[in-house]
Image (tube, rainbow, N blue to C red; front, side):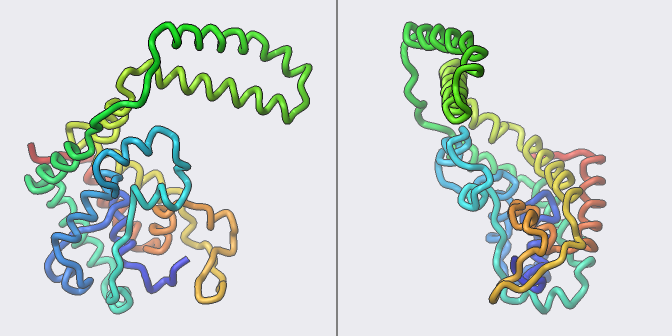
Length: 273
């Protein structure tokens, strides 16, 4: 864990829908961030995509561990500012309100709509994975059906380790056939990850934030581990980067952000056309 001093921006970042925030000249100046950089964090964190091209679409097909740091860093990042410590001592709540308002203003602006559209087009897959002919797919389905019919008998015959291998093979075949059922799986994933209406993804991120913040234990204790800090509860060390960013932000800032997000959702999420 990072020290509690590293916080207001991770606050403000995760404070609104797990994304980094936004932006008045005064707060940006204090954070030593340029507006262009801040808007980039907003766009990429709301889109959940820090990769280039269609890499993210490819990675989202279940081939990467969604809990790995590498995968999480492709979806969510927190900016670094050397001036956080001084801001943390100031009016955190006021800064949170200001940043939240400006994030919403940017999200509802034509600039965000244009940036999202460009990012969506860049992520559009240019090709699809190999898909065999229909005869091969039909044969694979028949093989799966036979193996599934043998499953109950195998449970009685095989030792646990071999049964686990057998069941893994069944699941792998099911997944493969599910992919083959869709002739354009990359395009399907892209359309889900990048809905044409950007307000859909914004709403998803806001709802994701509310769901995540509800699980955060703001009273969790930390202990020193060399130059770093770790949670006393080892299970918390396994939590996602977003969960930890919310924790570091603190309950007071997140209480303010939760009110803002709930009101935003109540009023309706809109993105310029």
